[in-house]
Image 1 (cartoon, helix red, strand yellow):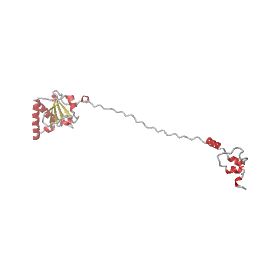
Image 2 (cartoon, one colour):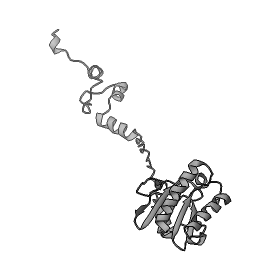
Image 3 (spheres, rainbow, N blue to C red):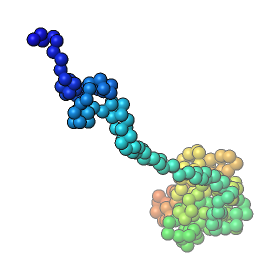
Image 4 (cartoon, rainbow, N blue to C red):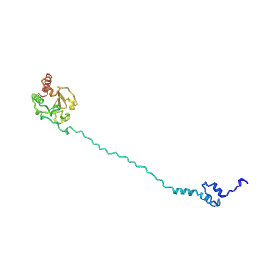
Length: 218
């Protein structure tokens, strides 16, 4: 028998090509066994059925991240107070002749009694009294020259134991030397408690002070 002329029954051919994607036309392969017919399913039908059975894919939304908004910052600008807006210095005396005297006594409101008596005698020798001057204690309220001048408008300013730069004067000068500046004559001298003694050094300091006071007031 020639091997090229072998005719196979239809069910044998169907079994050989059971995995084919193309279904044979009806009747093309003849009558197939029931089991063979069930194995053939059109590709399109199979795909459509698969798509129809596919469940809808769940879409997960990305979380929304809220960015905290910065709170508004309230900026309050402070306007520096002018000397006229500040409270006045407490003074001892009436300032009739616009003579300011700055002292430095941390433990007293103004001047201890013994030093006040010495100051009163010194003013009397210059034909002045407490009504003519204004005493300010730098220790109880730090003196600033602009503020002091606004309040007292001194023609003379005596600094007893208080350096010129301590009251924010823009100039410096030695002790026992009168220094005119901006309408006021300044005099820097040692503290009253150094002068109010009976030592030789204190007597020398008092003589120097007396010479200055004569030039200023007599």
